[in-house]
Length: 357
Length: 182
Image 1 (cartoon, one colour):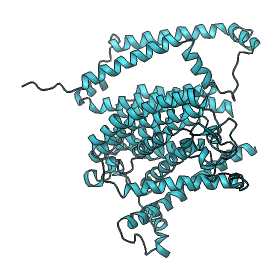
Image 2 (cartoon, chains in turn brown, red):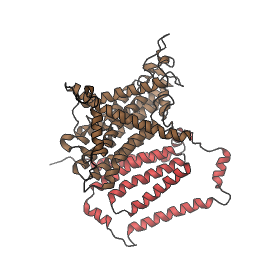
Image 3 (cartoon, chains in turn purple, yellow):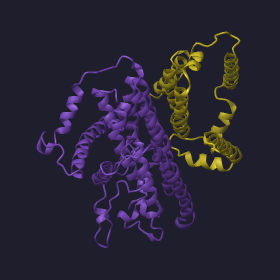
Image 4 (cartoon, helix red, strand yellow):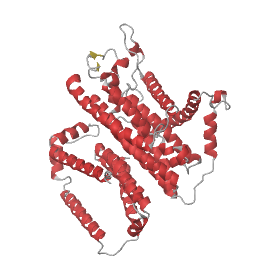
């Protein structure tokens, strides 16, 4: 009975968190955009415009449900739900703190990869169901991009998993801090099981993982259709991409899943490369900083803080870089990221066999 | 609860498959195929084959189904109409294929069912239970899968990978633009 209640409460809590996160991420997006472009951003609603996004979502929720005549009504209505559910399911595997995660399975990472591909189907469904050329073009671009960039994402994840030797996200996170059950070494020569902190993170355990993380970060930007890879939603060419025809709560869900996806990939990167819930502060002699800042509440705090930082970097990039052209996008994916990712897999194998022993 | 989930997934898979073949709207039936695959993946989970279930979603939904939808979008309208209102005679080639495949599956299924005699489990299952050669829900069977692939089934694995590589090279050859010589 208790189990059933927990199984119901956890998704609700996650949903509330994602919804709140999306609201404030939109606010942050507009404020950072304002900062980058040397203007103020929203200032009128609430102090410093803090209530602006809440006003926006209230407006969206009240809007009329518009269902254009020539749409394929089933696909049109099902698509936002499918996209959101796909992204939301991915959070089932994400660890927030040590042994504090909705589902502790041996195939967590693989599951998230599968979930990301369901997201692509939802986008195609939205584009086809809308029966609008801009929507269809937008979704075709989105799929071409997502399917291509799934390869560097997958390869970079493999390179990281070869170091950690497990697909269980909880164990992957465990291997990057003072609670690690195996010997972990900073750059392969300095044992840091007692020191912990930033030195125990995956990107410092094997230096090439820094490159792998960069590949993962770039490819994950493309996976969630963020600028500079936002040709699926290019406003100036495609009106609004696959969400052109959507309004009201449907659009709210599409928007929510976009921000949820941003958070999901940021968190995945944090768990795999940046130490997950582990503290960045190392133990220095008698100054047991790592011991003091490890625990349930600290774990959640570090996960959140690191993921939010990555989301902030995503937003910063969006407002700094211009959009890629479709062919440049494919060139980057197939001729730069994929070969480097393959090289990194080879280095991972060598590192695992000869350095980590 | 688990029994209920099992039957829910089974109904989902079979129901959507039946609906899929009876729908006239090709686009909808392609998207319905996703539900069938999803239901099948759910059934794999009940066999403790979580790796297979996730691979099914990833390969079929993320790759094959998207390719099918793209092929559907790129094919011309007359061809599709031909498909949608095609010949319905009993002698049509597609029907014979379908009959052949379904009879084959029926034979396999009856053979499997036939092994479940009145005493219960088939012999090979009883043997495995006696030897303790079973997996639990909490077991991590991904490493075992990898080891099996690289030892016992290495030939099949390599043949498949070479086959896929051939397909990849062929696809890129077809898609390549010939240099203009004039």
